[in-house]
Length: 244
Image (cartoon, rainbow, N blue to C red; front, side, top):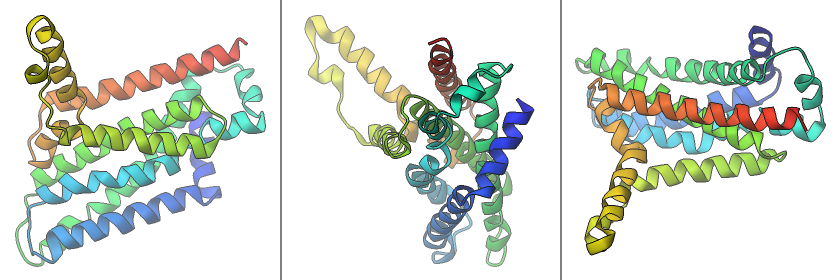
């Protein structure tokens, strides 16, 4: 896994992808920080964390689209799949490499905290919890993007499908449909189940505590478990390809 991790991490910075991700991420987050904090001179980062996660719709696909799709298209995946290394190690090595690039970007934006000290007293502990939520969200989307990259040989399709699914998860938080009001009688149980499912998979609902600076284990479990699920699915896809 260590060799895969080093190879993938080097690849990000031997090609423009790593730099494109960091430039786009820092540019957009800086714009959000300027609008939410600098112009209003607010030391609370609640609004910043409420909106900045939307940047992942555009930048996460840059990190993940090539991880498997490029190798599959160029047929270099056969060399990797026939090597004496476990599929789990391949997937985790690629995941950790992408996560490291993400961590660099998130860590760089913590410089916004001392900037706010120029005009106020920022809540450092609450802000760091918000950054934790930001990073966990990114990890989930990286795992999702890896899965989409594993099922296609087109980087474009992998990128677009990842963006669409991320956007869909965001929009679920704005859907005000109450299925228990629509499905009544014999279908009441289905309405309750759908309401629970919509609430559970909504990203905005899970980020609310992080944005407020509250560390809650439920959203932590949500992001970690879903990321683990997509990594598991990726392993299964690659494993099936190995034995074909």
